[in-house]
Length: 123
Image: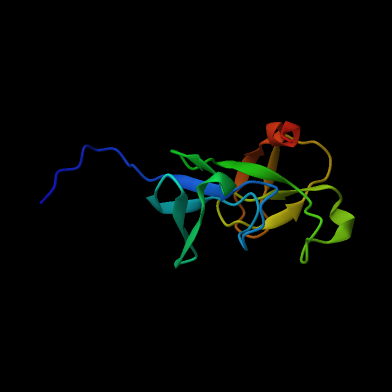
């Protein structure tokens, strides 16, 4: 039986804001496999492979709301939410942003997380 070194080597990936691959923009997905060209991720127990250049990869799952620019091809994001919305780090629920508070409670899972306002600076 292999011995664990006590570290979790799970990586996480999310689609870049300008990439539409049928994934929820701003959402983090567990990486199953990684090559120089592609990333295989777990999307609600469905395995999907996407080009590596289309995702951001991190070693630790962020515990902050992602700020997502409203995509021009958005189908299920109400227009009255404006140019940005927030995506919960736990349940991936989308919610409108009102004001500029430091934290936000998720209406679906009730988690209270900081908002990653720095993401609005990204192109």
